[in-house]
Image 1 (spheres, rainbow, N blue to C red):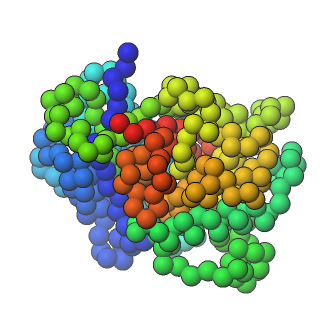
Image 2: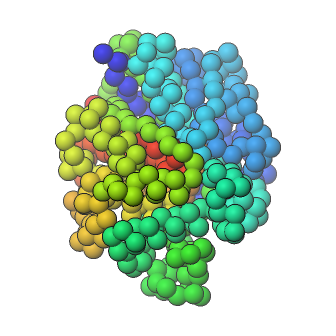
Image 3: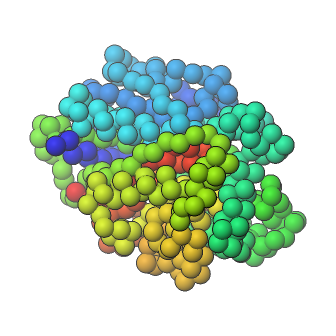
Length: 408
């Protein structure tokens, strides 16, 4: 049997911080996240056997590649520790975590440092949007769009509308929930932002159209930031029994990972006769449930999901099984997604409220899930949480990574 993978601790930077404006870059970001992650786990650099770094767009935004070498650059005690960078667009952090888990489960290494790092506020917004478009099928889709990803997820909304019907008011309600949840998160990018009712309405001044049917508050933000976790196996814990204290350890109960082709149109064409619009996303979730021994979404106490746009969260609702296919609106209307509801979704504020430093998002989700099940989520804690799901997607769901995290 594969080794159990434990989450020993972790750290998230303040996603409201503009590192470039402060004259700082990947070295400073990496140093802060490495130190914070190790301190929270109660470990020294010498305890780390291997490092996996999730980063999507380092070269495009900063010119810096080879980010697997940055931890040893800023922390000399990590010199000679094997390290690699992973790129899977917005799922880069999830893929980095999966690679670390595979190292532990195989017995190759016992303790892994997983980092998600991204700097995006180095260039003007229009240029940033162009850089992010590299995760689509370049030259084959979205050529006429000013903003690639709002355009793509507006197209997904149109497809939902065609298949099932879609009221844009339900997308606005998803945005309002995530921004509201973010107010309680001390690391959320938008925690201090001010909104009015018009911010979540079809108001062209307060909430202007970005692309298609998506408006400003339907979109996550350009964000700088990093997150880290330490993953370890049973052999490591046997050598360090002092770490299994006070019920603060979480473990990865299950995972799913599916990859499909780049174009959104190809995905939608292949699923035209399927009950789910994105069956590979549904299958990744079911894989995580199966490996975790979870019968369904009602065995979870909450979810951190990928809301790069309100439409991606709307799709996640039915693909997790909170509702039937195309019926996500029911969970939006009846309060199921609220903290205190049937299945709280994005109590952290998610990507829309919390921020979306692309390569860090998957690691941040894993960290938030671990904090929830160990009672360490602070003011956005879901009371009594014992099992949490996470869904991290890259591109138009080209790469999908799902986790179920439980208390120790």
